[in-house]
Structures are given as structure tokens and as C-alpha cells.
Length: 279
Image (cartoon, rainbow, N blue to C red; front, side, top):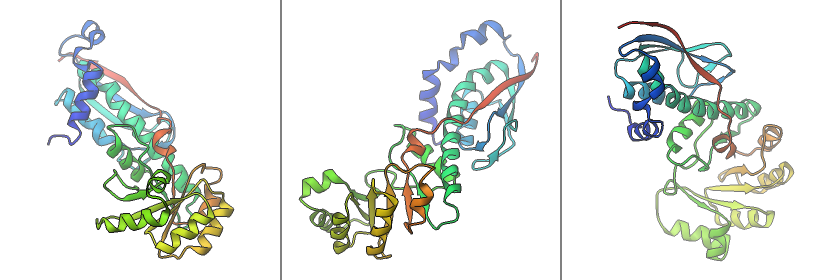
């Protein structure tokens, strides 16, 4: 079956000149076969196994991948993640591209999981944003799911999020919300509020969601007290692992964290050749 990410895989392999690996051409005999192992060098949550598998298959369909874990699984330092068998040149040609996807996406899943764990005793959810790597959004948002988070809108047609620039252009929160409702599209309408006066105005026009931007936990708690539960309440801006629980326990429904996709460190994984033989 053709990978749904074939265009992305081809672009990444072309960028790496994977089919012209001069070092392997010089040092590895044509037709030599081998075994490799991908191991975890740190604790984390896996994501990206499918695209990593598809990278190996795109380089050489004869490579056999024996994955010991699945996406969303926890791994510990030292765990064997995958054992691979196939032509040595092909294994090494695919190695970096496969690991780039796997490490990056697992890093996002791991970062998401850390936030989810911090607020697990509340009803609040951790959501992503559109602050993603161009071309990788769907994979990165899938990684958020693997880490236990939820997805916000995937793109600009997935929902109407009224921010300060829209409010400025339209004239007021009231005018902007009414304009969105008048468009008669089957998507939710969300409005961003930066002050309590804006929250009070937003409540009068009943958007589906109110986003509290850069407010303190105390301000969020006050906002929650005047916003009916029929309106979903979200907070974002300057929320970290250290203070996330303080926000979650105010009674908000979700916290949006842009950093989980735009700033998460890669999960440390490595691939080593463990054996070779002639064809």
C-alpha cells in the first residue's frame, strides 16, 4: 500500500541524497546484508513509527522492520524499539530520514504527555495549535494525540478563531462574532479575549468558545465564574509545566500549548548495525 506521506518522504530522501550515499558505496560491498537495531536513549512516548517504516520501504522494499512497540507506547532508556534486516547500503541510506521523523514526532508526543500528566487530576485537556512545522502539521498533530492531547483546528477552514486583528478590522468583539455566525458555516466560532471587559462583551454574544490569552490563573478563575458552562473555555499564553496545573484547576476546559509542536526537543533514538553478511 502506498504511503499517504509519499510526497513528504520523497522530498526528505531527495534532500538527503539517500540514493547516492557515497560513503556506503565506498565502504559496503554491493549486496551485503545486515541487521540493525533502533534503541531508545531516553524515556518517552513514541510517535512516527508508520512514516519511519514507510521511509525504509521507499528506500528498499526488501527491508524488514520488526517494531517492538506501537505509536503512543511508552519507552524507557535502553529499550529495543525496532529490529531491521535488509541490504546494508539501504539500511544506512534510510537511517537518518527515518530517525528524523521518528525522533521529532516522538519528542512532540513526549512533551504533550508531560503536560497531560501534570493536569491528569482535573477535567482539563491539553490542546495543540497551528504553530507547526510547514508540511508536517498532520503528523505533528497526530503526535499530540499519541501523547494524550487533543487537536485544535487543523487549518483555517476548520473553525473560526477571532483574534485581535480580526476584532480590530471588524470594529468590536460583538461585530466580529456576529459576522462569523452570519457566514452560516458548520464550524465553531471562538473569540480571543485579553481583558475581563472583553470577556464580559464576548459572553453577551455567546460564541461557542472563549479563549483567554495571557491571563493569570486568578484572572482565568474570575472569567470562569462569569462564563456559562455552555461556552467552552480555553486558556493560552505563558503556560508552562510549572503553572499548568494552576490553570487547569480553575475549571477551564482546555489549555492550548503552542510549544508542544514548535519547541519540543527530539526524543533521543539511535540506530546501530549489529551484524552483516554477504548476500
